[in-house]
Image (cartoon, rainbow, N blue to C red; front, side, top):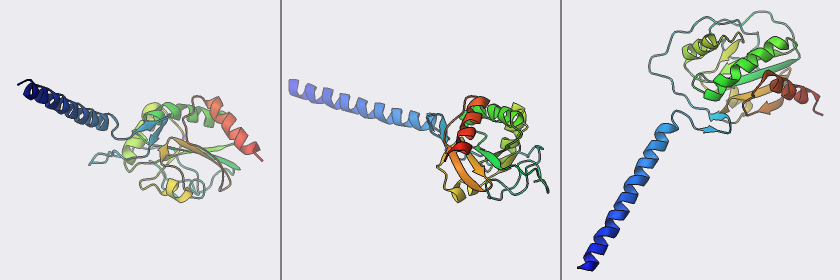
Length: 198
């Protein structure tokens, strides 16, 4: 009799453990959707709704794309003529990315403080309307390109995380920062080091 009770207790404990593990797994999948966050970056993934939002107007993008990669301008057209700046700083972001939302104001501040650099964004998500709306909501005047199919990161062989900041001299990539910056000064120091690297 005691053996049967012991068997039922062991089976009950095992069943409870299986239920707890399955529930924990389901909760983790829910918490980590639509993207997993790691060390201030977010794994690039789209969470675009079925019906795309209309694209609000945004500032004009510089001509020629970003880093030699031609992309459409988010919420505007590319300018026909631009200012020739030797160094371009490109930030890859998406509307659903929390670290991107935190970093974009610093990037905008950096661009305004350092007109010697061309500073642009690349919105890495098919939902252009949500991307433009986020920039307008945050008061970001930085122009951004629209990358609905990962053309920019795929062409340059960038890691699949965002935000990621890439520095170019002309079309030559001289630095890549797959991390979140916490101030405009931090961005400036990183770009300066990239420029002065041997």
